[in-house]
Amino acid sequence: MIRTRVIATAAKAPEQVITNEDLSKIVDTSDEWISQRTGIKERHISAGENTSALVIDVAKQLLEKTEVPGESIDLIVVASVTPDYGTPSLACMVQKEIGAKNAVAFDVVAACSGFMFALSTADKYIKSGMFENAIVIGGETLSKIVDWTDRATCVLFGDGAGGAYVEKSQEAGVVHENLGSAGELYDILTEGYTNCSNAFNDIPAEIDSKWYVNMNGREVFKFATKNVVRSMKRVMEEAQVDRDEIKYIVPHQANVRIVEVVSKKLGIPMEKFYMNMERYGNTSSASIPMALNELNERGLLERGDKIMLSGFGGGMTWGTMLIEW
Ligand code: UT7
Image 1 (tube, rainbow, N blue to C red):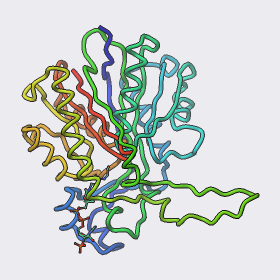
Image 2: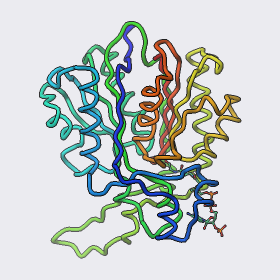
Image 3: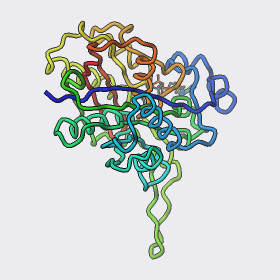
Image 4: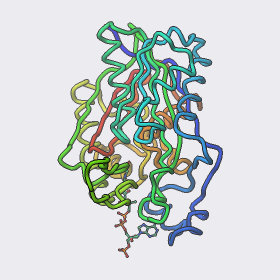
């Protein structure tokens, strides 16, 4: 059976670190509130580098690690809600910088579930036999679309990118997945609204705040716990894998309290959930691949291990993937 196997992972975060203490100097918040409600202590914030700089860095690292030349890459898929441009896609910018002149390159948008949707897309091209390999990256500079006067959202997010080089394998790889969308809930988490304007119509400007991240935190919390639990259960049932067989779960790094609820509902101990949100905050589509890369770089994964990646995000969307490492 053809499978899509993760051969290498990589991540990149901006150098600048902003602590909870730093945030308490610009909005009415405290380290205590942020730590207790979210588990986040600090996040990396761009000092000028745009999303393309982060995702290109990840792509270059992946080629270095695998020693695969750029011209041998078949597919580049980047997930982001904070690209540099409307067009070109980030994937095309990556293509240029790594010399992947034979690749097909495009972006996908599924907010914090973006990496799951991007990996799922690459998996289908590889399983269909159309492509042999792919670079899949999630990357964001959320700092440019966060309202830095809104304490309810600005304390949650960070910038970064993470990704994987995947290729066709007969041995291991993606075993099963569950993706989902609930568009009827789209307005509980939005960002980046652009107003309609032209030279012929006098169209009143929408309120500027719709450009920034707008979120009903409690509704997103409810959505996340319900759907992540359901999605992970479904993947384990359909793949006939027992929860005890799972070595690690890499959840979307949004809030430690969400992970605690999921852990309790699934009866899977917290130690199995790999988390680094304490140091990076919520980096949206980058959060899962950044955490996966850390798990991998720390040497905690062995070939044959079963792991699950699971995320949720704007759209609303969710995605879970069971991978044999
Ligand atoms: O990638 C997907 C992204 N989103 C998520 O995953 C978000 C999911 N939701 C959450 O993680 C939580 O709902 C939050 C962390 C966003 C908020 O936690 P909460 O326990 O739901 O707090 P809340 O929104 O109910 O607010 C409680 C209080 C409010 O004050 P009052 O009305 O009780 O007086 C807020 O005004 O906390 C206040 N508050 C803050 N206080 C200090 C909100 N933000 C802050 C802050 N510092 N940064």
